[in-house]
Image (tube, rainbow, N blue to C red; front, top):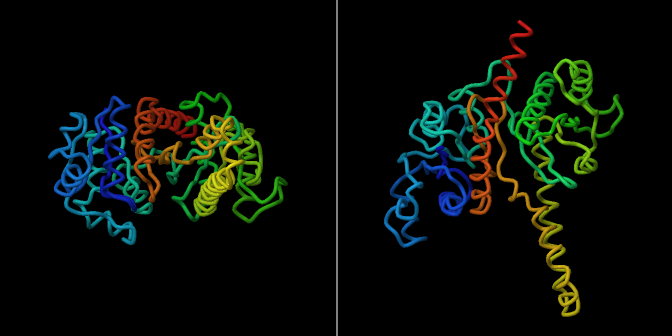
Length: 344
């Protein structure tokens, strides 16, 4: 297996990308190809690890040289069309040509969606691919889709997000009947804006036919109850929800740490609780859950957080290996092919 990593994408590139790859390589079986400027990458390798070439760290670490980088402020479509030797475009083309099994980038989200759609291609029958991010939930995990790729959606898109979530959770996490909720401001059928009300009716109408276990509207406060497996929403709302959750996680962790260190008595009193505190901290740390998979494209594409540090890159690379091993995209394609044949 070969994992393609955009070494130049993200706020902390290439430092965090390189360090994350070096950490991950110890725990995975795959080869990792860092795509980017070879001179810059090797100079960083020399600085961080005191060796001249990355292969000296592991023979499963490689570099594929490129000369351009897609910046966060670039217009997505123009960047994909004109920066053909950028780490992102080269990564997509390598994936499309079978020179890699999965592509990871923390770069420009719009360019990543554009490149995944135009260069790799959509699975037939899917109107819009969507970012599916994993979040912690009570005694489990929560899938959030769309986590930020489609800011303007139609009811059909949310229906397909629910369909993709069902297929993904069933095949990857062995959840027989994933519980799919529609993110809304209330649980009543009449609540919400035009998009959520129309989406509710469409999901209610089509759920049985598409084998979706639709449980209705879900408020944000109930999303992490452990009674929902996936939350469906448009990319604008989903991204706001995602970043608010990440912010609350940081707040809880910071406040708890400061409370325990407030004085000598609280510090001493916390010692017996340290194992439980560490478990709680790990559960609340979004970095433990890696990146978000673009569901709906023909090959695995993973979006890492733009602010990813080395720890998050490490977990995202490990997660990407699991995506490929679980054949998530192949199973998604098979399911939609069956549905398309049935309805044509």
